Length: 145
Image (cartoon, rainbow, N blue to C red; front, side):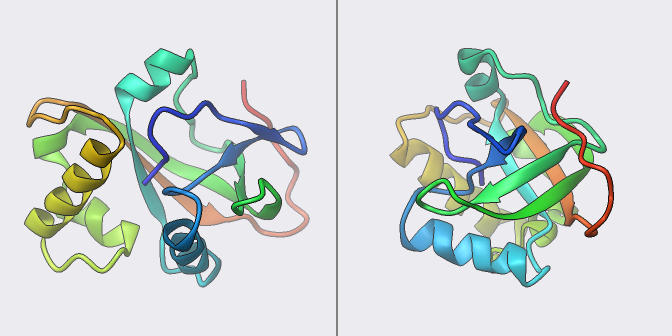
């Protein structure tokens, strides 16, 4: 899950992908990405709007960063959708690979995370679903629009 309420940083000319909150959560989620297991992340549309950020787009490359903002790897966005919190599909939750055994468990975990960040979440809250893959070395970089 994308850290709530934080604007995108730019690292090496690409938008940074900061997953979760700094510390053990980010370290665990980054490891899942580096292993190729975690292939998706969710964010709240309201956070993009508050920060004046555009949504990620298919083909965009993002720099996955650690707690210190240092680049770990580049990922490429493969799919982006927006839906209500209640309509996030199990297909997406499985791609997030955070250990949830059902969509209900995914919703409970994300509800807890976002409310701990001061967000108010309802069934109709718009959620941005971003799928990605590890970038293949040698492919041309493509920055944000």
